[in-house]
Amino acid sequence: MGIDIEIASEGRFSKDIMALYADWSEFRQWASTTSFDGAGLIKWDSLEAVSPFPSQSFCIGLNYRSHAEEAGWQVPEVPVVFTKFPSSISGPGSAVELTGASVDWEVELVVVIGQRARRVSPEDAWSYVAGLTIGQDISDRDTQKRPRNAPQHSLGKSHPGYAPIGPVLVSPEEFSNPNSIRLGCSVNDVIKQDGCTDDLIFSIPELIAYLSEMLPLMPGDVIFTGTPSGIGSTRTPAQFLLPGDRVTSWVEGVGEMTNTFVSGPGVRV
Image (cartoon, rainbow, N blue to C red):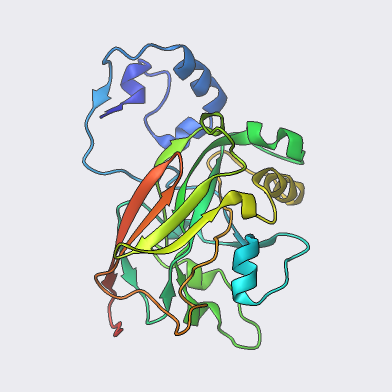
């Protein structure tokens, strides 16, 4: 069960989550002082992404020491930043079409920005966060590595559905230690990744400070903060997703989401 915010607030706030982010501070104040007595109570059959149409979607590569080690890369001196274009974002229970024979999993803790952030200090960064959720940085490795002499990340990670996020958004203060959160994923109930954000090279406050120094972060923007070790492409032999596979991703204090994978048009894997 859930609450239709527009009904419960008597029209003060929209039930459109993207419109809600624009009034996030006021919404949180209202929610913290409101007694929900059944007004606006609804039942849902499926959940959408917690930020379905962000203006910007950032990804951080090689941000876990364990992942940098398994990939054979040195620990970066500054955050490695690329994007998953917003059209790739999908819901927590979505079916995802495979685009080839080298599609990989990458569970991530995702940050959703709650207010405009520009040149924010690490000490103040958490106050700009609306909440944390689960994400999968699904990656077509063949596309990602083209061209071989100058590979780029964004297109191979931005196919439709390649950025499922959800199922809920949890405020930072709900975590006993938001800088140390366990996360992982399984494929067909076999655990593939099991890590903790205390292994991050650049913490969430450091990422927000770094990105907001470069450009303004807007309400509803999402940051995929990196993946721990255990991806498929670094295994021997390499392992990739097949039609019919189920990937269950989890984050401590948030819950879990499961995405199924189906064969896309013309894909033979």
